[in-house]
Image (cartoon, rainbow, N blue to C red; front, side, top):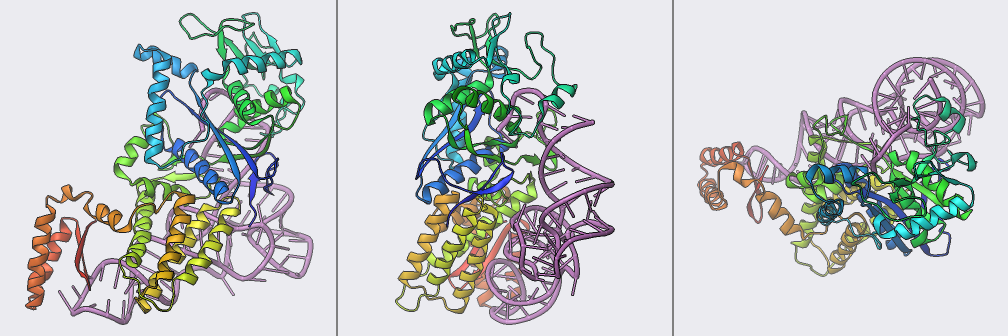
Length: 477
RNA sequence: GGCGGCAUAGCCAAGUGGUAAGGCGACGGUCUGCAAAACCGUUAUUCACCGGUUCGAAUCCGGUUGCCGCCUCCA
């Protein structure tokens, strides 16, 4: 099944064909490291992580580059505020970012360049733009991109330069020839980090680092360039202008942008106090539940993050693991394979869903369908053949490889889930086990009043009992 | 003001021309001493509204209303 994907540039779904055979060059805008990463970052990172995983699974030879912006106004402001150096701040938050990515099982990109490591390439690119007449030095020593020299400016975000100038919201800066021009090189102020350049002691503008690093590492034309929707304008528009201005060839074949995350219906912001960091979130929510929540929506749709949504995702994850546990805890016996055909047709439909513009929401629905089908098959006949087990293992490896969920051993996962939060009940596991024993004794003696009393008491404290052929199980609600 | 997006059941959510996936919740049933879990069934004749194109529209076109994003740093 070949892949089709939605291209922001054409506003259409297009068949995916990389520039050079099997090789895919993908660049995604990473984070500016001045604070802890939040749920919005998590979404973008997970979306492109899944895209990268899927491309590899499909056999593409992928080179994935994701940058760190490690020098900019916000980092400098943060450093000044904390009385430390900008380098220390950047390094601290890169470390925190990496910790979060590990927790969320977001795989590292192949190359994770930092802006400050590519000052040389950035300067070289600005010089090329200057020599082509697309950049000019302002009186203060900063360098700006001359938007009037790039005819196609606005093609990605669908904007008309005339109208933008007419719109009063563009800032007026006397250093600029044209209000739309943007900084390629910023002369540094007193106390700010700086590098030597032909123009002034200064630092790179925000947009140029991505153009310089992506084209230096991947070549002048990228197959996929990704990022959050908010980056379309001005960041990606400016990157296009810089890169195409420099190299004269199309910069990006497929522009991919993920939708935003709101929190209980509101935009996340520090002033609203609804700023959810990944670090805080994973204290309450299993990382796989978080991933499941994110991939249960199409990557271009907005997601409203709420306690209810988290709850639903967690339940879904438990449902999958319980089905897997049913199979893995059954000893294989030779005989008819009734799970294998279900697993095989699942793999087909999962691939179809993912190949259609990375439709993870549909792919997740397929997992639900498979779960229902396998549960049903097991209700009809509990026997599991070695072929069934192997087929289901193949499903699990497909799903975990692409979506990054179902990577744990089902038994262990369920154990951990059912023990988590036990402290809130005021009971210990041995106390619960003792009560279960007492209840089972009462049941045996047909003293159902006492048995139900014990069950109700436990339920009040948040412990749910399940009587199964293998004995009584309990879990924290 | 400009540009763009979205509007599908109680809730979440797929679906870009062929007759409404999936999940959660609710209700009824099977199982169970009773529950829980699992399974079965029911829960949108209809996709914000009004027109149009078409044999056929949630899907395409025009208009209306509502919500959101971007236009300044932003995943």
